[in-house]
Image (cartoon, rainbow, N blue to C red; front, side, top):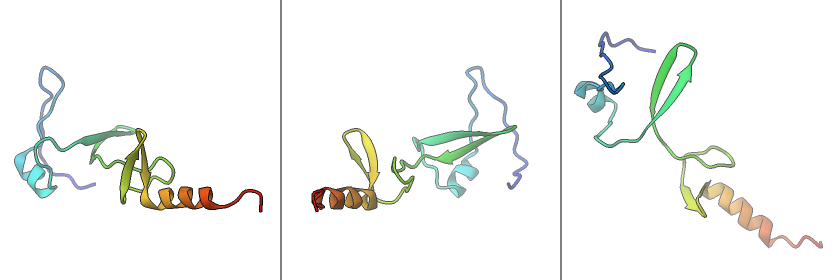
Length: 87
């Protein structure tokens, strides 16, 4: 981890503001969804990227019936449906 030397206080609602320089450096425009992780004593923020429920890939993810599936898993599922189970 890289220290920035920047300190911010939580406001009355428990929020913090990421400094503009950091938002620009990390390409975080307003309304960017962020995911929050906890690692021992650390709170980590990460740009949210929807991942495939089967393989956790974030490449070419599609929403199908409310679930996230990547292109590769979709192709595997489609191929398995095309195989005749009686052979």
